[in-house]
Image (cartoon, rainbow, N blue to C red; front, side):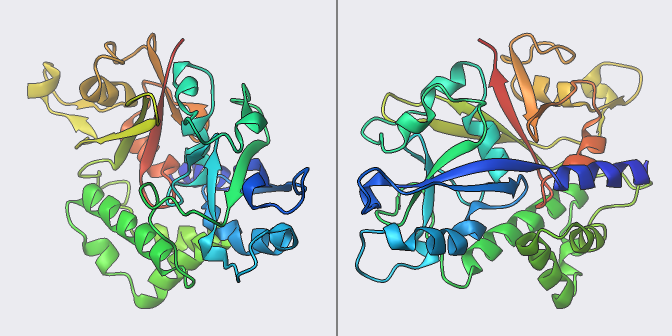
Length: 314
């Protein structure tokens, strides 16, 4: 199983997403807008890593006369600022795809890139808009020139996942300073070999089950007419369901279906069926009968979390 898990982890690591990035028309000195920047970008990586090359590409098109720096850049999709600390694959799963949730992502008064994406959910490349002005302070934490903010967000998420898995933070705290540096460098450089070597020291061996599985469930909801809202739900999910809870004679394996049934029974009334909604992970439907610990071992994001997006059926 260990070899199979590593193969799956590497295949997920190598997953990429074609992006078409357009400079905001409000910031472009060319009337008919600048040429877009096209790139195939790792699903597990983070959009701010693109900012230095994007600034170089779009610098001659910017209206702004004052100096502009990469860390001032931010991205939007159909007028909605994209959280930079979410991996790009998670962002894509959240903001695209069929279903009623697709209709909530148009924010009134922010139509700078809406014409590029109208009725484009699920169509590739994913079209994003790049901004260097008017940072959305209410939605996004500011970046810094040294990437310290990004580093701290990522490492704090790794620490939280480690605590959920083990019931203690000893594994991440035991990492040497050099291994901590290498872990972050593997994210910056998107190096699977470096990442796997360090990350494997954080995971309990196969004979030692997780205390709980780091699982976050993302529910796109309409919180009002003006702006969309993403509700993030998480709870404690042990690999085995105690007999007192399962109602059986012994412990029952915790699956994706049983976890979702306990967390959001209105969308998953049956732990084995997806009649109302479907769980999506890395752009693919997750089998309801998949043991949640096995999925956590081989299909977690780089910070150790299973980020499952719920897509409600039409």
